[in-house]
Image 1 (spheres, rainbow, N blue to C red):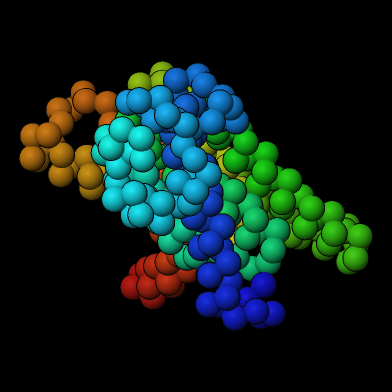
Image 2 (cartoon, rainbow, N blue to C red):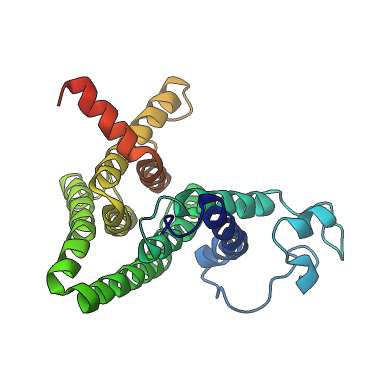
Length: 273
């Protein structure tokens, strides 16, 4: 895709979309754990109940213009909202440039938006809602499947299979690894939410490349182990403390996408392969 347009343009468009998605992510993070609809009713101030006006719903800018306070009651609006919007925009701009084509880009962006929501929910509530994971996986599969269908139509079934199998192999690999951990620990070392998220991440990373997929898988466990060791050393956690693993899965996947090939090449050079 980046052969047809410049990287700054791709990043700029993706970043703008990310701002809008980030605003919706805030809604998902607030409502899904509470079992509320993400569609209705309209957003309102939790303090005074005043409805958020359309002009006050512009990502980041509205928060700045309101000086971080509700227009009606002047209660402070948490800085988390613009930070999530800006962070999602930055992630969209970064990951979109790593996609080899439009179907892969759409799949990556769908999972990235859902991933931000899932990471925040897991950190706050200690769970990964199946509804969010399911939507992410469905949208990613729809985007990738459309690309495979187009490839089959233009280049024949063998070409479509060549395009599809790395993504499907990635999904199967991640599902097997996390599923086996869940079975081996009887669910104590890994939750079903993590197992459900695994094939979604493996699918999109596999669609980009084997290096991205395998390094993303390894980096999830590595970052989780490092942070866990730091928390234990600092006595911020005990050995039996439950630490949400979803954010590490997502962080590993993001790192695998962004720097996976470079890390894999460095590793192979170091070991002499």
